[in-house]
Image 1: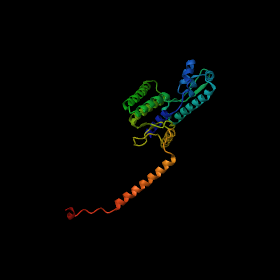
Image 2: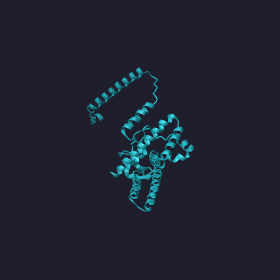
Image 3: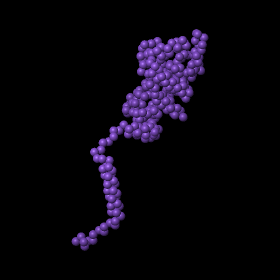
Image 4: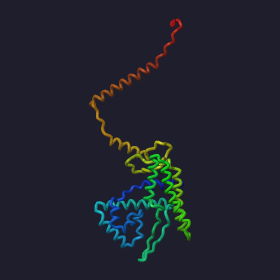
Length: 284
């Protein structure tokens, strides 16, 4: 059961598809004071660092910066990102830090849900790199990249263990980091099961684990394989024939009759009695 949880968490993070708006970096360059809030992976839930007035000002400047056609794309981007964060917290609470309350001097209190144990966008980039290296059969480099991720979390865990004083929240956070280290250690043993779906328009699970013993597993699902085949057929250039369709049809019928006649002759030959060997007198 634990192995299935490790596998589900890794594929969930690796397969999240979002498109960061192309104007994101430009916005952060114009307003560097908002770069952290905009680029932080938990931006939709990380407004606990802002006062309501600061948040309103941020939204105002952002709306002035982006054009109207891009505003809808930005809203969709934030919506999908928020849905992913909430689903990740709902399905994998053990990999999240403890929740807490943040008291502001202005007199209001934020209830902050615990963040994921890693910056999942950076973790996604690292995991996808490992998947791609395995696809190219660069197993040593894939193992090295995965080991670097694990070493970082192991160092984080060592820092937590040296902290004082210790509390229930400390135990919770320590267990979350331990689970991440265990997840990466489990992945080290499963590197050869990593597969990348060959369907260029895969929207199911492009990065997946091999689910049978076949080494020729090219698609994450049979439906994805069927869609890839249909896409290849659609992109394939139509074949040009020198003969007309009527002539080709007649040739096909003639070839079928010739093949059938040949098979009948072979069957008759196989059913005829074998010839008797010649007598010694005949040999003389």
